[in-house]
Image (tube, rainbow, N blue to C red; front, side, top):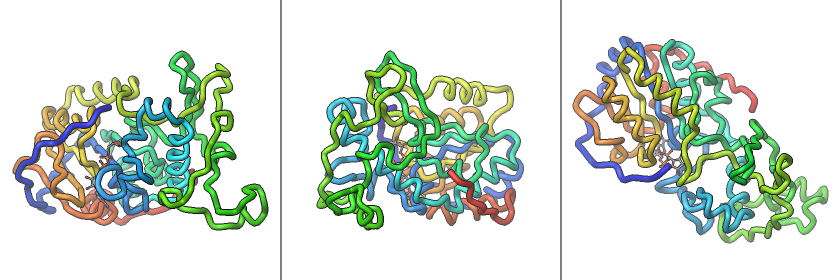
Length: 315
Ligand code: APR
């Protein structure tokens, strides 16, 4: 994937009535989701506030080069994100989208999120395509090895990556009960993690395992892209694309907005920032709903989903 600045344009105002009527008549719907969807679940986004992890730009840690240079640091970052994602709960936007997906036969979701919250909100798996992988998949870092472990929720992923508590002996009972330190705070000292203490590949026996997420400079999952491209170019046009909580600056994911538009879709954006209009901008036929996705999404989807069901599923 790669980053690109979006062009600015005039933003149409939100018109709930016209959106509701279009939503109700839509047969084929695509949704593109980003980190803002999980913001009110307490997970930081990548750009804007929260984009720094310690002194590092979070994006700069999401590269194969960063992993090669310092796998211990990159694992500390991802182990922390796994920890935070497991502690977080899906919010009402995750539940509302899961319900919309269940109620709309011809519906596909492209998620850039790796946090597992849509899955835990019961979003149907066959309608959820993870463009950037998952924090809970772990794979071998060697290019010649195809080892992948799906849905590994072990936290910490190896003992050496346990979040420090300030106790001298991390295996003591006192340490187990002690409050974990916030290792996103750069004033908290990070323990050194030796390469031998990182997870190693049980298949090739040489590689260090790495998070199963798509890093900058890497290709998106081929089967997912093929499936989505087939869906987009099927005979019938697309009626609507929902663009929720994404800065739409990272390609190829962001390119789906213009692709869907070229196949007939009208665009509805939900974002806290009016500057984050996707792709080549919005037209008068589109909608921009400004606000927190957790509040806005259940409200705008009400004509289809009705009242929200919020039964959390366990990871
Ligand atoms: N509700 C709706 N939108 C929100 C909220 C919220 N509560 N909070 C923040 N946002 C918006 C921000 O205004 C921003 O436009 O969510 C967007 C988050 O943008 P990014 O941080 O750039 O996240 P995303 O678009 O998902 O990034 C794409 O970049 O670093 C990579 O792989 C990473 O998948 C990620 C990709």
